[in-house]
Amino acid sequence: MRVSRVVMKFGGSCLRNSESFRRVSDIVKEYSGHQIVLVPSALSGVTDQLIKAADKASRREDVKPGVDEILRKHLKVAGEAIRDGDIMRNVMESVERLCENLRGALGKVEREGLKQSILAFIEGFGEKFSSVILEGFLKDEGLNVKRVDAEEVILAFNNYLNALPLLEETAANVKEKIVPLLERGVIPIVPGFICKNVDGTPAVLGRGGSDFTATILAYGLKDDRSDVKVILWKDVDGLLTANPEYEENCRLIKTISYAEAKELAFFGAKLLHPLCLIPAERKGISLEIRNFWKAESEEYTTISSIVESRAEVVKAVSGIEKVTMITVEGEAMVSRPGTAAKLFTLMGEENVNIRMISQSSSENNITLVIDSADKEKAVEAIKRSDFFGSHWIKVNVEDDVGLLSVIGAGMKNTPGIAARVCSALGRKSINIRAIAQGSSELNITLVVSRKDLRDAVRAIHSEFQLGSEG
Ligand code: ASP
Ligand code: MG
Image (cartoon, rainbow, N blue to C red; front, side):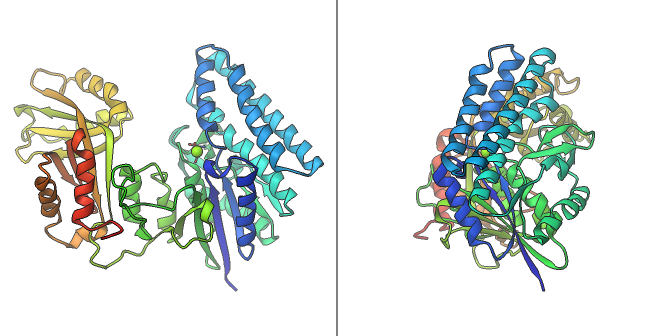
């Protein structure tokens, strides 16, 4: 008989107070016919508080008020949610003990400075706290749950703050440490976000990394005998056809392919960890994004391998405001192989996230669009470089821009989409300052003036009839 396994991630917005904890328990009971793994995020806002405390410690400022606040928040939620006296005492003790460890780590930062591995360790405390409370609460609700240390399961490499999982090694750990629990009818609780670097030090999977934890575990759980699904419980219905702050007529996307959703995660709202779809895609595991407050609703997004062949060419349009466009130009670049590569290496070394690139066919300029937060370091690096910093090259930085990304797998085989995008913008007198198509042909990305971004999103949304009245 095939077994059905569901990995459920609960976002911070689902872990706020006793009411929301009760909902988690209702949902888990709803799914009692399946083998369930639970992945909690930190309580709402806690990861930011931890980062702030670490930063303060590195400047030798007083961290006590911040830590006290974190402790108070968790004790309050635990106190309100858990009724059984013994369980409550155990949870409170664990929370206090974790808090002592946190203080120890912050003390280390005060003495030794803020290294990435210790910052990763500190960032992960939010998920440790939330898991302890969730375990106690669900035990109190009569569920057979057991906390499993994420460090014992998820192995990673690359760096400490945006670590990349070692999927096969992790899958072996899942089989050894999680599957036996499932087979005994236990519901494992694995804290999200946290992992261990191959060198044995603590690491985390990048902001929003609990989504990634869920799909990494699902990858390990998938085998010949079992069907696996991931549900990300959030405080929204799912992925939308446009940013709601620009286009109130936007609609929920009910089904979308991995490839399209990856583009949206990269360009869209911070709804999904940009890498979390990779493990799911590799094993064909479908993913649902569901609204925690409307658990029975049919309005949610399913991400799977199915690419819709309907005439729906464009799935979504996404606008990003805080970007900067850097153009390097000069005759010296013409027909010089490797110029673009040099520029990317430079940006890579500085950890600058490149959102778009385009090169003119005359080859005398390359345009990069990056997050405005990375502007200083990007421009510094270019100016310091032997080649790009020389008088042969002119560097132009434009801050008044916005990025518009039009996404959909249907574009691949449909000629004329770029033309429709351009004319829709033309009719609104919106000037296109740069344009590029991803090699995947799943998106067309345009740079417009920031003041035009909202109108641009709306023009595309209506051109492709993405709205609810479409
Ligand atoms: N708590 C971490 C963060 O806020 C991870 C997560 O929420 O998924 O980034
Ligand atoms: Mg969070």
